[in-house]
Amino acid sequence: MKQKIKQAIDCRRCRDKKYVFINQKGKVQVEACTCFECKVCEGSRRIFEETSEGISKIRECECNGLIKRISLFNQAGIPGKFVHEDFSSFSMDPPQHRTQKNAFLSSKNFIDDYVDRKGQYSQGLIYMGAPGLGKTHLVVSVIKELVMQHGVECKFVDFFELLRDIRHGYGEDISEKDFIDPYVGVKVLVIDELAKGRNTDWELTILDHFISTRYNDDDKVTLVTTNFSDKLDSSVALSSRNNKQSISNAYSRFTIEEKVGARIYSRLMEMCKKVNLEGTDYRRTQS
Ligand SMILES: [Zn+2]
Ligand SMILES: [Zn+2]
Image 1 (cartoon, protein in one colour):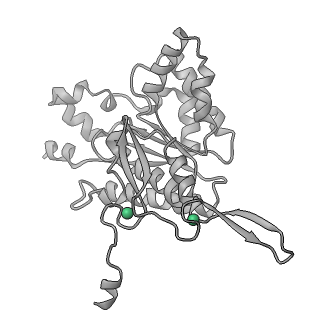
Image 2 (spheres, protein in one colour; image 1 turned 180 degrees about the vertical axis):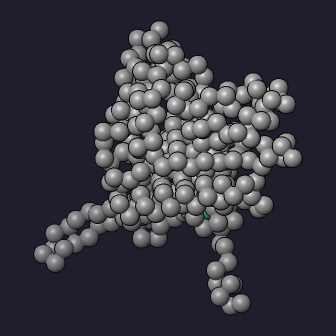
Image 3 (tube, helix red, strand yellow; image 1 turned 90 degrees about the horizontal axis):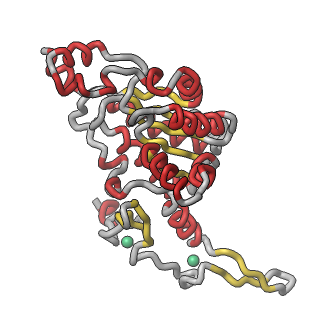
């Protein structure tokens, strides 16, 4: 019991993490909590030292690590609606389907593996399954943890939005490269909602550039979410016969390979481990 009292939380705002996530201008941002103060450097983030030879030196204070992670995180571009999403808020009680627990564990294992290998030759993840099963929730939880606990550079891209920005950029004389470069070079990239939309030849050319560049780099890892699966679920096909809503859902009629083409698909499968998510809702309509 005494142990418990010792571990009581001092700051209820950040639960002693010293930082908080906020939704600012449509993106998740991090700010240092008001309780974050460093008694060593008193906020200067620098420490003045004298060597044994009497030479004065300035070194960075350890507390600057958090400041750097905050600035790294604030460039990740996670949509503001995911401000509260993390592993602790991923509900599996009761799980909709055993695949949700597997997806949760795969996400956790991915982080451990990435950190162990220091980002070299790590395989990413591709979360596949119908909307509403927590794919983006999990992938956001992964990057929040990678940046804030391990200082890894991560970026989140909604591919559909990026294409729109590139189209607008043509009118303002901003090149495709200016939009794409920040994403292709990042250590860990999340591509959310891959294959959403029409997937015209132009769109697939840009996607191919993304995937090929990252495919050829051993220290780049890609995490993908998509509403499409690698094969059509027979139970979905069955229920869609009796359900007009399902028929209108492209993800129950096309595979991911059909949406993105064989070349992109095969590279994705090499770069990423499959994480299939299924919901109980389809099974319910069956019985
Ligand atoms: Zn605090
Ligand atoms: Zn300090």
